[in-house]
Length: 367
Ligand code: FES
Ligand SMILES: [Fe+2]
Image 1 (spheres, rainbow, N blue to C red):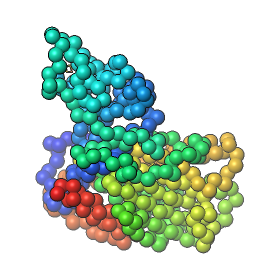
Image 2 (cartoon, rainbow, N blue to C red):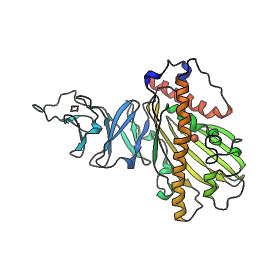
Image 3 (cartoon, protein in one colour):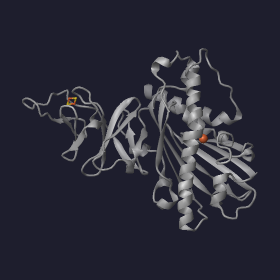
Image 4 (spheres, rainbow, N blue to C red):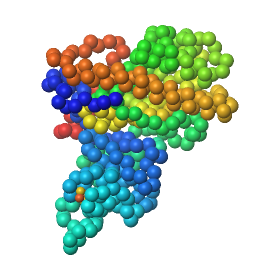
């Protein structure tokens, strides 16, 4: 997956802007990494909203995030090392920066520390097994971390690998993909959807600032993965999906199968987690995992097998099926020589609704 160079881009029409808008909501939490992917002594480099950032664990175990660009000659601090428990030493000439971004040690000359020797620091919070970073100038509000409580206090055996990929496309195209699950019947035919699930009842609700898109396919053959969750399942079932978008770019899906006409909660499936972090206008860092609910398989060995199968299947679906189409879509939009005006279908109600909310939030932030 490669990112097209800025030189390869044509000029963008207003419609291009709407679909692949480079504006980011800054006063919001974004996932920088899975918490267990930042080990002691490690320096983890990220680009978030075009800003280079380095994350590390301080001596007390808490995560710190500072600008990954030394104030001296701009070497990436992530190439340096942690010294004294809490500071990063620049790899180039040894300036040391603490978690507030202040230079606290200059090994050269009279060892004075120039007042401009500082880098930016970012508020971070560890919650729901992820490290969240606040990119804006407004005070960081811990209450605004999106609700992924389904990840807390669950047996590891029912949770799949905490994984991530990078998609070379604007984060909005990835949200569009996730809020319009009609694509599962085509792009993911056989594993996440099938011909029976094309004809689904679609509901779109707004819950505060969240958008919830439901798809309910009654009397369907159970799609591949879900059939395995339910030994002895009936030949026809209901397949349900409820995708919740939480601003700016985090989504939680409740999906599975149940007896025809029964309540979804009585069935079996998983809560699927999708956390999108814009790296730049045309690259998105995508963290994902899934947590099973209504587990009907009691054998540990089988559950371990399913845990791996779900993880592998989802990674395959996102990296090998969604990403190539979304990346090609990005290139097709960028390279258009005329203004594009997309046709709107019944399945687009969710994407249209979230865009309206996100654009309102962006406008409020600019104001
Ligand atoms: S570039 Fe960091 S100390 Fe010189
Ligand atoms: Fe998909």
